[in-house]
Image (cartoon, rainbow, N blue to C red):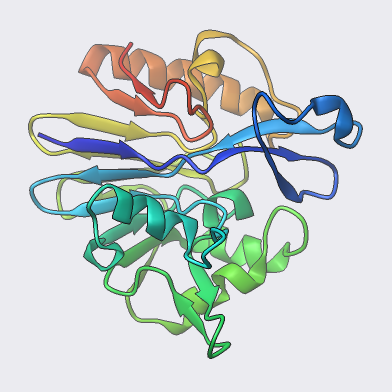
Length: 248
């Protein structure tokens, strides 16, 4: 039986600069933010199976006021030692998903992986694309370390991890975006990253302007919803803290 733990980092506004600025609901006002700002919720997930502690995307990589990485603190709050994470599955490398891959130690100044005991799974073409397009959506400093460590598996195309986790390259949101299906024999848990980011987007047909190929993402959402209904998937929604996961 898979256990799902949403690791909400809260709400943020993001404008054309692609900077994520914390937004406190009930206190902050959208009209005070730059014109064209979008309100975005950020939420990685931990899925615990009888074989693994699986982290799905890594959040923004922000620290709390005590200087502790937010994602580490969330895990600790749920009784999980961050060093227990065995797998980190990356849907893509935009900085709101990949900022928590690595961090600079405030004392030594050394860059280290935030989950050194885990095996990271990253699409190879996405990695190259991210390094070539570093600046706004991608941030090379967060991800460059992946090329220098041996606990990284660079995947290409579709495949399987340990016979129970499937990955599939979808494109749509960005050219080499991928999704994951964890099937432990009892539960099927689907992580659609940013092609299935919110429950509201699953239920409505719309093409997002911020997607690399909005029409493709729209089609993918419909396809995954039909497959998920037929096979009893639990969907995880990275950008939906009000309804983190659901079945259809």
